[in-house]
Length: 250
Ligand SMILES: Nc1ncnc2c1ncn2[C@@H]1O[C@H](COP(=O)(O)OP(=O)(O)OP(=O)(O)O)[C@@H](O)[C@H]1O
Ligand SMILES: [Mg+2]
Figure 1 (cartoon, protein in one colour):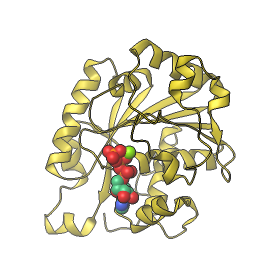
Figure 2 (cartoon, protein in one colour):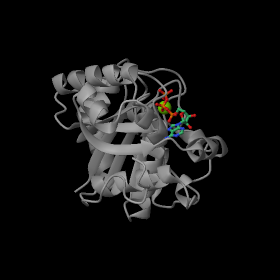
Figure 3 (spheres, protein in one colour):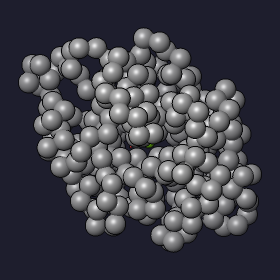
């Protein structure tokens, strides 16, 4: 059965787009047929991170306006053939909750996984996308400001009827945790009041690959690449440890 997952956050820049792109590529490596929807209307970025900044002409707004069929608006990745991207409109647009629900339902008919990269905060259609999906992942960094906004986001999404809300703790630095300069994973979960679905280490390769549009999954030594892959396996229901292959420092 097809699944849809939305990534959201209270605070900006926590790593939602990196999470969506890399978990999607990992799911493709695991044999899934994945659609990534960029829901950041007016400020899209998935295309750049995936090296697809040319060729994404039609957006989900064109699909909802009836200008174009979903199949025509989705563009396949050059290298990862079972990955398609549906981009966001270039200018801000807000649709009704039912229209967003219809879009996700339609996408689930053609893809085994649909992953939605939301903008930060709660403006526009963020809560509509999260409510329309089967699961919402709040991506947060292990600091008090990010975690407090993650907690608020979790409460809000539950109010909107999304019962499966989890946290992905991103940019984790064991050295800082050890020194007491950053919250550890348990403290992060407690602070956000959310159960865990991913732990992603701080890793320069995430930044380098995002800048070049190259695929992190091919970086054998990247600990973040392994963490995204583990998260993808868990989304498929495989009970692998979140920190498998990442090292003992955590
Ligand atoms: N695990 C990580 N290690 C190192 N850098 C990271 C990691 N995750 C994300 N980054 C970097 O942090 C920056 C913000 O990431 P990203 O664009 O994924 O965040 P976002 O939550 O989508 O931002 P926005 O709220 O603007 O949409 C990028 O430069 C990205 O490369
Ligand atoms: Mg983003």
